[in-house]
Picture 1 (tube, rainbow, N blue to C red):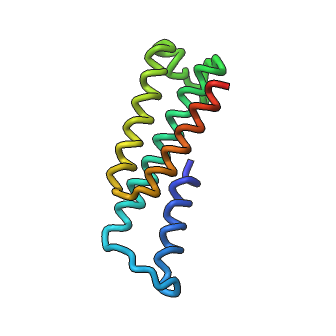
Picture 2 (picture 1 turned 60 degrees about the horizontal axis):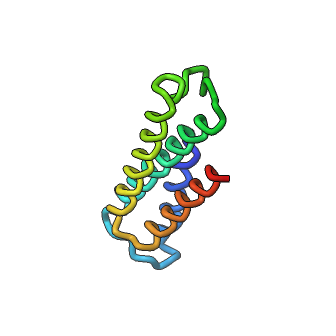
Length: 114
């Protein structure tokens, strides 16, 4: 659960290293927190959609969203989470990060269709 956010923080710390000679903006830590949160939301959205495709009844011994509220609500919930995470990433004002995260979400879509 904590590996993805920890990885975001680790990359941030490595980039921030003085030996790299890279100027890091003062609010970079907030951007890292935003990105780490968005990554977790994307992961959650993918699990919600996967549970529908797998017709899973439980996840970690609890009913899945689809089992508790129906597949339609689960699909819409997963879509909302993807959209919300995309908005968070876009708020970082980094075209490169936005493009990369968009590609990741696109790959989730291809995976769900196959």
